[in-house]
Image (cartoon, rainbow, N blue to C red):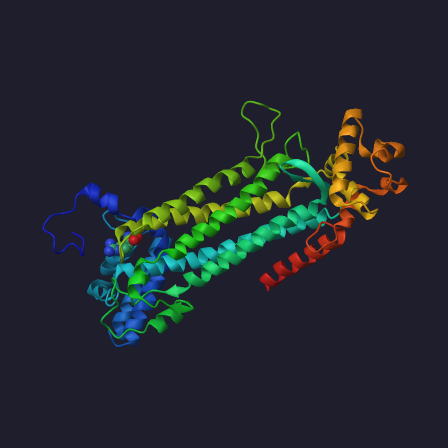
Length: 459
Ligand code: ARG
């Protein structure tokens, strides 16, 4: 029988054991658990709570267990409640009775909080590194296509011409906010909970600051009840991951649209496209579709954990064991999505002529014609009305703006002069020369800024 069931006469029900065990998923925390335990044993020895030899025997045992797990030689027994008990149980086998001293001044409640924080700190740096990777891919594509123009859309209707690079850099900005959010989450994850015990603190002269510095934490927690029942840091990751996946799903959706026959604006590299089992002609954007699709499960994990934590009384409750699977899945889904989208974006072929052609159909320069009239002295609202009537006239005649004669223009306003033909896609883009606008000059500046941000974060 397990060494924590000594007060019971009966063996546990098999189904109950299986139902309550977290070992199938929290074994992933073994490295963090062992790191935490080694630091704890060293701290206990430094404080004279256990002897130096005992600490040495414990740390040697833990190190050999880490190797066993890494080499796939560890026997994960189904009856172990979780990774913490599995490792402690094995420590008794490899180090003997001294193993019984490791849990002095510690509870699984502060132990699991520690492990999860160690795990998440790593996951956050992996996440921000991959975000930087995708930003890099977007900047690369923008740089390679600096002169490419495309229709900008609102309501998915052609609105005004823009530079493709400007559109791509919009995603750079979203991802930049994501990096900021994750770094903010890191601040609140970087708190060392050991020393909180089960809930009330511990009755030994421990050194929490030593533990924090051994384990690379910036601060220690300030309330033992809070420290063992706080999962805000997990929620924050889930929320930040949800927002980030929302951004990625929008990028994925645009790639799906642009690669459709109707838009025909980009071509997926074959390495990132899939075929159809039935229709031989198909080249499908499944990677982008799954990036869009996986957004759902990440949102789900956020809602699931919010619901799990709602109205839980202090301090630790076993409900909280439900925090892990969703977190692991969100981390895995987000990291994989960021990585695969980086590859997809890097290899994306832009069909510049098709994008350009799309700006020449329709009446995408209508705003520019209104602006033209404003420059000649018309009030904007009047100018808007004049151009609206001009659009319906042109539509009726089945002609584009540039195909209208000057006297046709002048039927709508005497302010139209021959220079109206100088209103073009290029002039439209060049005119939007405010900070954050799509003019070449502004986009070049934005690109330089983006490259500096990526460069600085590497250094
Ligand atoms: N497996 C537990 C979890 O993941 C560890 C903490 C268990 N504490 C307890 N009192 N049963 O939350």
